[in-house]
Image (cartoon, rainbow, N blue to C red; front, side, top):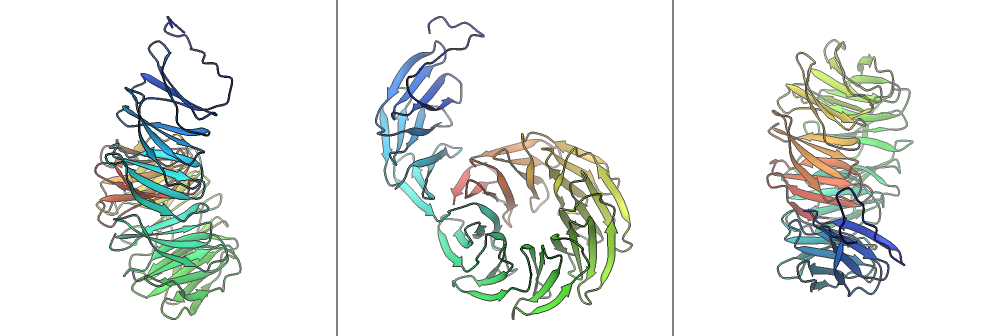
Amino acid sequence: MRDVQFGELPFLKYDQDVRLCVYSPDGTSFTVGLFDGNINVYATSNWERTWILSGHRQIVDNVVYSPNGDRIVSGSYDTTVRVWDVATGDCLYIFVGHTSEIVSIAYSPQGTVIASSDRDGTVRLWDMDSGECRSIISGYGRGINSVAYSPQGDQIVSGDSDKVVRLWDVETGECRQTMVGHTGGLKKVLFSPKGDYIASTSYDKTVRLWNVGSGPSRKISNHHNDAVMDLKYSPKRNQVVSCSKDSTIRLWDAETGFCCRTLTGHSDRVNEISYSPQEDHLASCSHDKTVRLWDVESGACLHTLAGHTNAVYHVTFSSRGDQIASSGPDNTVRLWNVNTGECQHILIGHSNDVWFVTYSPQGDQVASAGMDRVVKLWDLVTGACQHTLTGHSKGIQRIAYSPNGNQIASASDDTTVRLWNVKTGMCSHIFIGHQKDVTRVVYSPRGDQVASAGFHDKTVRLWDAESGECLHTI
């Protein structure tokens, strides 16, 4: 292994399973985790082994460096997490408390906190100065499908595939309330405008309304004949509207749970619904390739907007309520005039499915993203593409504007969340921590935090929008 020249690849041979290998942040150190519980550390300048870190009694499946590279953290099947000094090879801390094998570990961006999770679904946050466990977060068995902030920004609600709705404290990361009653995985959760109750939809064909602060659901609405795909509130009318795979849209009284009206007309599943800002109109999009505009008061269909050549995934109103944007797998975004039903612009530029589209808070711009791994910003007057935001290595599931419209957050299948400057199109932060695809992203009402959810890694992460630090993993 001596005298390795530029361009040569060193060959490290072992007589046992090599579980993982990882470089230090500056590339000067290389670490290998082994089946027997040992960890080998090499200097990449000459590929000499500098340390054998011994202490774990079983397989080491997780190793990460601190952001500055001076420490190594390892997680093992022996249920412990160990912190090692890279310069001396000494074990600084042994974190004990997990009851099953460690499946993932992560540093906070500042290197002050370590998060570790185990096979039983428990996350522990460890203080790197004291070695103490700051908090224990547990509860998830399967993936998270939906997450939303409360209007006050002090709580987060999540819905998962284990049929459970959970309420979390943003400051402490603790679970305040667990709501059980659905018999199918959750599709969507959201707060009422006052934050006093939560609505949830499920693949069990029901809509449930939960009191914040007490467990039982206030009402159950089970008039749909198939999975409920989307849910929206109307604060002015105190209504909840839902759409389903059964091709119908239903309006519910939020106080009584009574179904006020059923809107029919789509010939295939209804994927999404959106209230106009004035809440007098409702837009729906469907697998039948159309967008429909409805009068909320009468239930009449005002326009059927046809033009997409494939299913329509997403629909949303502009901030003024005079325009609708829709997108789908025909690779286009279409902008429709609410009054006339005419298509004003066809935004062409994406090379694959457009999964999501949203208007800026000021209403002068629309952003779109999807399978082609880019975010595009479009001028509403001309229909011209102002910026193409590149950086993600896989499809982008969701995008969200900050409340002031200066930033866009994007959540991707590449496990990252990115924050972009709307004016320059530059990426200001990359949030790294999720272990698998990130499916949801939202800003807090004040815009100082970003929440992201991963379906397959079963976590919600709260990020500081200014510093990029991960505040909590729940």
